[in-house]
Image (cartoon, rainbow, N blue to C red; front, side, top):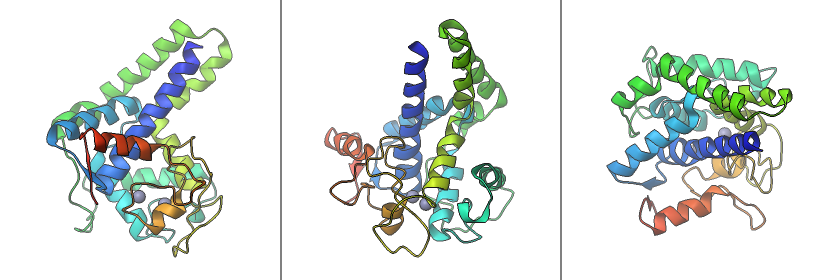
Length: 241
Ligand SMILES: [Zn+2]
Ligand SMILES: [Zn+2]
């Protein structure tokens, strides 16, 4: 039971860090927040991603490229150029590392207006820290796993960020239905996207990239949107209207 709770908590907290902070805030600036909360959620996104930490600047740049070049050869992760999700993610990893380490020239329009905390990154992006998170996940399993097969879930914790990315980027541009003509191959994969907290409404999102609610029809549910409304109401963030 403890393992299941840990897995579910890790899945959703890191997914929230990704969709709320890296995607909707860092890449799209759908809302604003003061420096305290910006730093708070930067650390939140780091700690919940742990061993598979993603840098906000590199995430924002790659994601803005994804919107600008969706499903063309300049898209950092279109499923239509690769035989499987693993090959697509390995390609994305190369571009991510080049952007992160400033080894490629990035179009100026993508390379601005995102949170940057080099002092936090120095710790978060180090191998010592990543391995420490991996050891902590393993220690939790050693303490609480009651059957050998539970250890099969352990790799999900090590790679939680890329696993979310693989599901969204592969399924979200390949499987499902379309509400809008968007000039790319984006799809809405689930009617109620409980699994990926709204990220699987790729077609709705590519149609209206600045809209904080990824659900567009009355029967669609984006679970992150009510949280955004709540955080706006209690003035942690301010929605851009
Ligand atoms: Zn997309
Ligand atoms: Zn987006």
